[in-house]
Amino acid sequence: MCAIGMQGWASVALGGFDLGIFDQGVRGYAHFGLPVSSLKSYHHEFPAGFSLLGDHFSPVLALLAPLYWIWDDPRSLIVGQALLFAAGVPLIRRITAHSFAFAEPRTARRAADLAGLAYALGWPLLVASRVGFHEVAFAVPLTLLMLERGLARKYGTVVLAAVLLCCTKEDLGLMVGAYGLVLLLRTRGSQDRAGRLTGIGLLLGGPLASAVAIRWLIPGMGGEPGYYWNYGSLGPDAGGALRNLLHDPLLLVQAAFDQPLKPLLLLWLFGTMFLLPLRSATVLCAVPLLTERILSSNPNHWSIARHYDSMLWPILLTAAIEVLGRLTAEERTARRARTLGLATAGCALLVAVPMGLMQLAVPSSWQPKPSEAALVRAAALVPDGASVEADNQIAPRLTARTDVVLVDETPRGREYVLTRSDKRSFPFATDRQQADRIRLLLDHGYRQIWAEGGVVLLHREGTDPIPGEHVPGPDSTPIQDKVPSDVGHNLFRG
Image 1: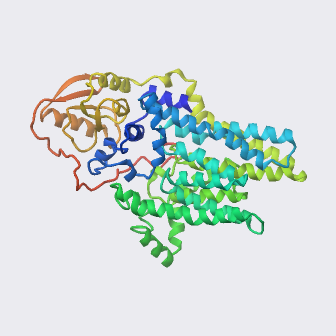
Image 2: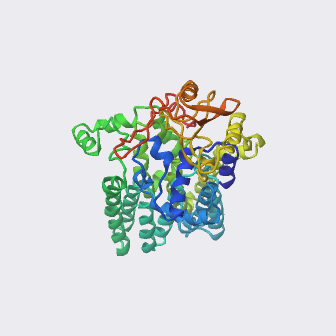
């Protein structure tokens, strides 16, 4: 995972969205301040000083601040995410030990080895590492910790992991609530009173934590209520969607199957595990996370080329292991369990090769392409402390030493502008828009001080206002990006 992340850095494939955003945020924590990100706030028109806690409620990211005291560099996040993913290996082995408690010791040991390998090289984690850093770095091991401690009936640690999950991302409280239901199902009719009480607490507390974060905490930190509501086909907001669904429940089915990629996503996630997770109650934990994506109108949520599947990975893998453990315990199904276990692990590892592992062995994948290499050379010419508008791909290399925002549709009037004219870069729809921006700036007080291979570095030397120039103020209204028309047509492309 660390190698994949470092490869992305070396090839200039990791952008300001999202590595640069998290770098600015965690650096704020490291200096005992709020996680402020100019990359996020300027591009999405949030008020000045906007905290990332107003975007997603993820205070757990503050735990990464000590990494910056050791190495003040965005790559600290790559290392941190790899370490957090690695922390899941002993947890998945212990989950396997619980699930195979009634199997022969040799079988249980081999199952633990295979489960650890399948988890560690699972394609969802490879993809998450390839696209940079996200909150999933904490979500993966914390989910495994909650599931493992639940199997061990150590409910105090279950609650601790659940609380930390609610502090990882606001919607994970729904997953915590689903696990509360799982505990209730597993402890019914038993003497496990602590398990039932924990289940009730999580079932009620998890969704409540999500509601509090979405309704009060995020807006209280400067966020826009309903900013991430991507369910317009159901209603204008959660209340409207509920009313519409009560009036016409078929809206739910229509929203879930209105795009070909949505059922394909489900077939991929469960088919590559031979439908094994569906036979375990643990799979209920995946329902809220999958529902969010399947009902969403945002095409970014439908493919497997982003980080979203990594949050499902510990749930689906744990559920599959639990089912295999039950089958192994029964003599008549033991051989079938071994076959399914090997097939599932083999499928996970086979898929991992083209989705991350193979790329590591290609020398050219460690080198930036000519356009990205030119961006690196141009960035070296920007002085420390300067205010910069930068191309998305080079922004993470400037966050540590400059005041950087994204080059986007709106001129910001900064000292330096580093962009390119012949290769489309987020968030522009075409490279022609970028070329038009360069001409606009040259006509209004900027001078080109460096150019190579379509990459240009501009310096502002005049004071004339730039048409369309705007800096977010206290009354700014946040906006969302328009998803390009070529997104949402391929399951394996972001």
